[in-house]
Image (cartoon, rainbow, N blue to C red; front, side, top):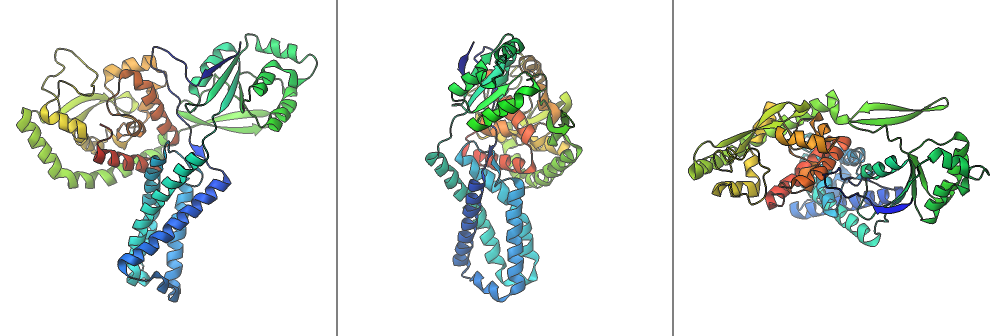
Length: 478
């Protein structure tokens, strides 16, 4: 029973849609990106000189200043490397690389700016250096956009061809949990009696004659995933064959899933041991860091936008009266309910007769001002107070109403993992999907949320905030 099918099974219920995994760079591409960043930085410094009419080459006569600038630049490069900008990319499109580079620059430029501002030796060149850092953040982002767009055009991605072999139930279930792109193909090879078939094929002692291995080779597969355990005496020859042909060999114990945890593999004597550990975002240190990050950004933002909040509140009141704020129960961290705050965009008691209704684009229940607020996402601004109160974070999975949470839990086994962290005003799913989606897209939304939980870092939070800000300005996520 051999079937070639696309990366997704069809079904009536929402399913967890696998998302592409981060792209990991080879040594050649990493060096090229470093060269691109360096060229962009030098170009930015040259432009800053033209604007300020100050020649930075004069720093050569001030050894202490030159050393300080070199040290600040080295910190920038090291920060880029530690963030992973030369090792991997979370960007699904070249445009996403602009936001990633901006986020990395915001983190990386901070130490350099501190040095430029407070080092007295650099005082005569301060304005030019600060402007050069600002130009460099923009130039690096645009250069990386061009680099990734050019690479995608010149070297199109080769689709993966994956063979999955093992017990039928496991072979059917495994592909839905893989990280795949649209053009990837999965060759399913379900075998009812895997051990018996293997023993029969091995009677003559030739590993190369195993039917499922021959089929994977004939179909040109570049990856072979086995869901069952193999006899140890087969491994040396099997590895020799697959490595010679450039086929990656992997084992997938279907009873062990990395749900809400990571695994590390260590060899202990003759055993391969799996050690589970909590996701980074679930550790106490990460929770404290996210809380400090939230308050550091939220408090100044609330102060700055307070006139806007007052103007919107007045507009809502003049349009449809009180109440100005809409309070709705949502499910937060640990499954605990909380009241989310929004500017009211619908008529009073809009659900008094119907009960909970899934909001859709073009709602007839919205008020005149409410339509504008929903289109621009300004109705979400009061959630900054939820962040200050500790109910939410700036970035995280969007909170749902308990009524729908109960439904989605039954449809999607991993749905509860969204509640491991505080929900967010924006999130990874929020910047990759429209704000108003149908319930059939909940599986896709969950896959984005799980990707965020599994790959979280402060850098990723800043990336999401950068893209959210751009979408807010251009209303592309409404």
